Amino acid sequence: MAQIATLGLYGLGTMGSALALNILDNGFGLHVANRTETVTSAFRAEAGALAARLTTHASLADMARAMAAPRAIILMVPAGAPVDDAIEELSAILEPGDAIIDAGNTDFHDTRRRTALVEGRGLTFIGMGVSGGEEGARNGPSIMVGGTRAAFEGIKPVIDSIAAKFDGSPCADHLGPDGAGHFVKTVHNGIEYADMQMLAEAYGLMRYGQGMAPAEIGARFEAWDKGVLKSYLVEITGKVLQAVDGETGKPAVDVILDRAGQKGTGRWTVIEALKMGQSASAIEAAVGARSWSSEKTSRVAGEPILSLPREAVDLPASDYESALLAGRIIAYAQGFRILATASADYDWGLDFARIAEIWRAGCIIRSALLDDISAAFRGDLPEGQLIFAPSFAGMLRDAVPALRRVVAAAVGAGHPVPALSAGLAWVETMGQGRGTTDLIQAQRDFFGMHGFERIGGEAGSHGPWWD
Ligand code: 6PG
Image 1 (cartoon, rainbow, N blue to C red):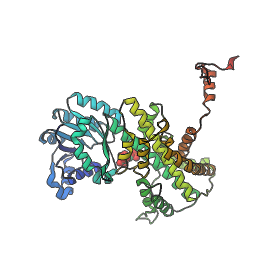
Image 2: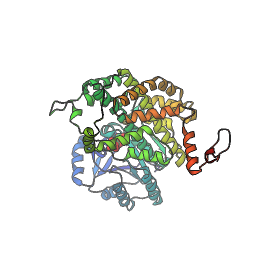
Image 3: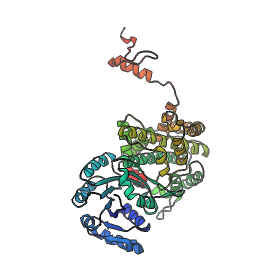
Image 4: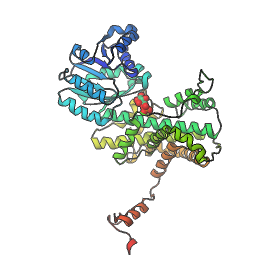
């Protein structure tokens, strides 16, 4: 696409309509359509004065036919079959130079497959991760683009305008070919799962271990949002915990069923990490904790059956703050390890410092740490490990003792802290030059003659087990 394309957007759900208003607000003309036409008319009314730049259509095909080439059509439909259906419909109408942009939370394997398919038909395909929820989509999300650089250049003016800004610079960029953008968004969500879970674990310990009221805990989060934990997730956690349910007058959090859903991105992060021989323990624990939460009836039955004693804990606020800082560093570090492995495996050439930069505003995991993370990736990084960067190693040296105290107190008193403890186990392992896998190797050799590498000696050695 040499010239700026005519823009179209298909799918006017919550995220789609918010993104469409954002595009209009930034002065661009926009064609829109939705599967059901009533939604399109409602959107026109919602657009108010912005409707002057809006052209609505009865269907995706009508919209594509009416748009002048080169066209760029953003799909804001649920991941999966709806994307394939839209691609098939558009392939019959679009011409070389036109682009299809999937802006949903798509599995990057699908994006790689669709890129090959669509580009094989002479069209351009872009897989674009968009983070920031409805508010971000409306006022400036973080945007992670995958596809060819030429394709990105064709939509860059629009993307830069609608994206969140950090110090005036757009939180959006071309990150790599085909599935790179969707993969980075997936890992973003994995980190999001871990951070949310750790915040919930700290809440649980203060609530059920220390007997604090939600509002009191919320005030702590509010205060922490002014310090090293400054972030969107800590900010909203503070607000949520201080909110009161209008109907009952109870803390809002107390009228919510403790059963969390998940749409797939956290799970994909873990699956891909394991497939690449990685382990992101904090993210795995967070995904697992959501699955456990869904077994609500079993847990309710289990409480009197297991009748596990639970005791009080007594930890200072500063320990929670430091433990959450260590946990957050671990979650980011594990996410970036997955990105590094995928970048090497798929030859994407990801720029980790740039990824950290475009996460500094607009997205759900935006936090004060991301500036330090981008600086660390631009500096000297021993073994390519974020936690070994001098700044992060220093922060962990100070914060890990508090994380140990929080995990130890929680475990000792019977309060589950799966993500904090799994994250701690990883960082302890990474700080231990000699671990216990010598014994695993001996066991493997004993039962399967798998052989081991002798220190300073040969691989394929065997032990004296059978002498
Ligand atoms: C974002 C969010 C967004 C969405 C997730 C939630 O970055 O804006 O991550 O993509 O809220 O899909 O995922 P779960 O429903 O799996 O929690």
